[in-house]
Length: 238
Image 1 (cartoon, rainbow, N blue to C red):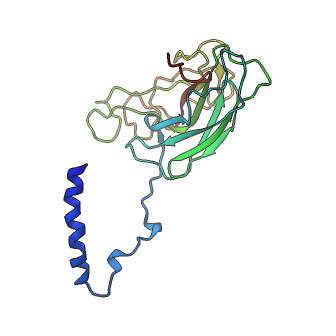
Image 2 (image 1 turned 90 degrees about the vertical axis):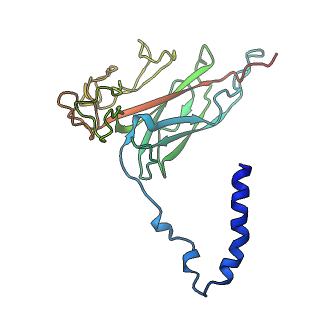
Image 3 (image 1 turned 60 degrees about the vertical axis):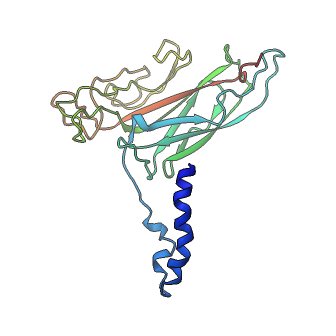
């Protein structure tokens, strides 16, 4: 950091001499037109859909006193394409929660959108004082481009075949009986309303697929991610 500063400082000092010799035309130094800002529209990639909470260990339930604190948290989602570029166009992201209340959706602006999650004490509290929040949006499954040609072809073999989104109540990373089903259109359910949890269709859902046998006729899919909140606060420091 200090080396970079030492290199830049002489340039700043010499800039006074440079500007003194300039004409009255300073057009090169004018503020750029904001309409020329770069944009990037496209599909959200599974590998670049992320969810964050402003606090993953909110002190809502006090295990010693049994009391609870009404709390609201900002949940943030970021979206990018398969080339690791932020998506600047609008994408609708949907949300569901195991416990509490959450806004049902938000629309991204410059790759980001937020919703509010808050406590709700009208029913039983989670047994383990934890809750899972799931976010999903229409996008494409990710793949490993082995030969670097920009598509998934017969020389490529690895891709992330996503199952239907669900609320992972026991945080096992797999769907278990009794967990929250989120019905969406997918390769196994063209209606998105069969009432059961659908596994992956063993095909790649992506418009960049040219493989002879592994391309799904459905080039998009609902991709998803989740986060768990530990609602009895951070561990007590001994």
